[in-house]
Image (cartoon, rainbow, N blue to C red; front, side, top):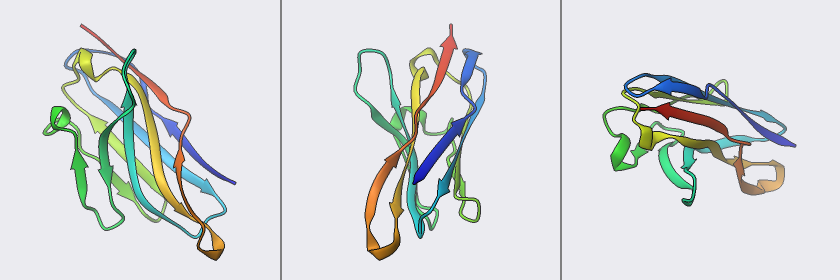
Length: 120
């Protein structure tokens, strides 16, 4: 069984910072891309940032220059420092990753989500 365990959400004032962390655990062969998606109230879940195993990064336009995704392959972990937070950054942040099991079975795994609230 594979789990993604997130931490680091919370309440912060606009202009403040938070750092999200996510670690994959369980029985797997490898982790490929890792990323964070956000779901705001009344909106669909959408990509915030993603990083490949080799370090290629993608961001949604609204967070460029403020968020900086990184990962530690040895720890199967991904991090998302978030700076200059805005009220529109609020929502539930879901860690997600590609997982490869033995026998070549591959699937996309999602975490339980961590709440980020930004007060104006």
